[in-house]
Amino acid sequence: MLISKTLEKAINEQVGREFGAAMQYVNIASYFTAGNMLMFGKLFFAQADEEIAHAMKLVRYVLDAGGKIAVPAIAAAPPDFKSAEDAVASALKWEEEVTTLINNLMGIAVAEKDYIAQEFLGWFVNEQLEEVSKMSTILSVIKRAGDNLLLAEQYVSQTLADLEKVESGAHGSK
Ligand SMILES: [Fe+2]
Ligand SMILES: [Fe+2]
Image (cartoon, rainbow, N blue to C red; front, side, top):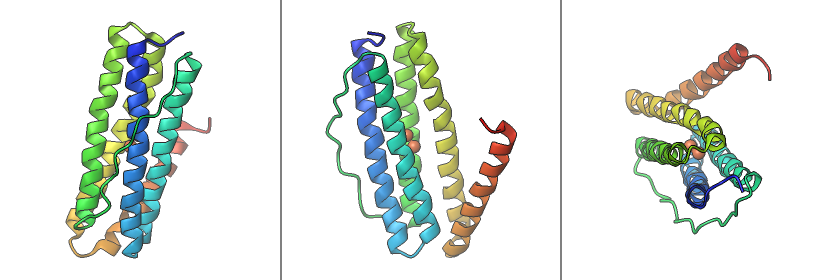
């Protein structure tokens, strides 16, 4: 078995949180979709898919390392938001918390001199930089847009799509 009981337990908890994040993003996406802000809806549904992919990546790792998966109970995510700003602010707050939690997982791997886990968790560390920066960009655009939310979502969707194109161009095709 290539994973300690401590790390196995901590990663199982993180699996639950990633599924929890997916649920929260589904609520946020639904809030926007119901309000006819379809671009933000699409963006947050895509975030939900990403969170499920994160959970599955962790599951696969634990299994590959010979550990056991037991998905924990997941608390309901809040379904109501006061405003677009409130919805995105809650997502940013969540991503900041997740960053701390991922760092804690890395802390365990470092303390245990588990280099395989460190290599694996490095991906999540980088991913959090992307997630936090994406959410804080969206939040600041919404704040700046004021009542002009339709313009904000158009700007955000277009900018994120352009940035992804630039990035995939810079990294080449793998
Ligand atoms: Fe995640
Ligand atoms: Fe995330």
